[in-house]
Length: 466
Image (cartoon, rainbow, N blue to C red; front, side, top):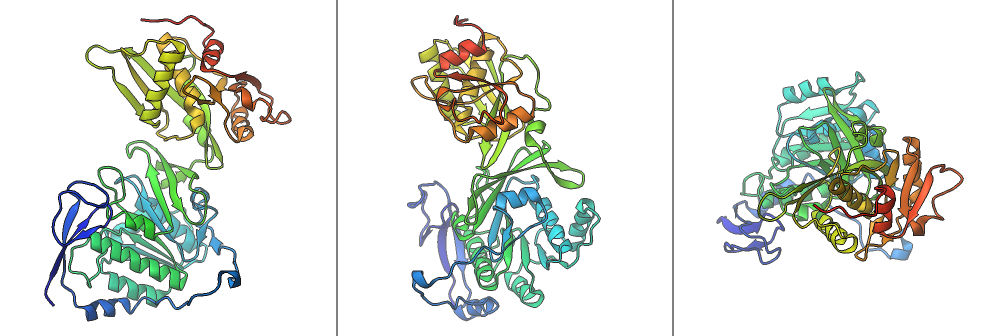
């Protein structure tokens, strides 16, 4: 068969017969990758013979009998939380993250825990030899018997399918999808066509046999999963590891989950024996918080159903030359600029010639609008050089008019703050009747505007300009 050359977009999977500088589908530049397809159709069909085909025909929706998700625990409570209560049989879970952040470590820990509980697990280590995987398992295992945990070093998809057919595992872990290749395609491993086709075959296998499949995926320089974006649409769940590889804490976040919430996170700490679960993340994030320092504010945010107390740090310094610099770590940069504009227009702080840096301590990224007031107060505190009381938490959404808007699920936020010893809370005035007086014994300070909050927290209504 004559080789066929196509160009595929590495971002969205769009295919073209000729090279294009800009993808017409996703508008990304220089994303078209050349691929050669030279396999005969008969060869391709032979490779697929190991995968059961879909046999269910169309049925009336009203005749479909619903059934409860067949879930089972993976042995790691933080992972179960992110997955929505455990692993669903037949689901496909994609784990992504920067190199060295812990994707292979958590996958092997899950495999060992599942095997110890009686499950049959096949771990396809495509990037490491069996000996290397064994050495890593000895470092992270907790002393329990790994049970029926099979490990194989293989990159050929057809061979992997044969192993699955022979062993009949309940869980399969593929590390990583960028190294697996299908001999039915003429392109090299890691190309757009290979990644898409291999993920599609594994997904079909999971849906037809009820085998849960974990897929490890690399990320690009921009922090997105390598390969076409269609890879995220194929799988059921997409999990991302967040955090700096040189720091100890890792955040596992669900950005897609067909069987649970996409707002849940799991908190882990990297240590010599692998990734350990962090039972009380709020206490860890605040353990090194300085006392009576300007620019430091604590806010209770929500990640799914879990309340977390995080420290917002702000630093304001005079810009020496050119335009003032704005930086945000763990907080949305555009939102920071909006809050700075509100402080300038509604409060009268002269921040145009100031460098402003905002950081969420602990390496966590927050998107909760309830953190708006804490960020604004931290910036004003750093600018004025006045500290916020250390026993007080601050929360509320800031509007463009400087008003403080209400937040959701206030009792759970305040309960977490009270458990960690905080005595006071500055909250939106519209939330003053929804904080649960029976259980929460903190002093509540309702505010309606940003100016009112600053006057109370910084004990001064005088604007200090420099």
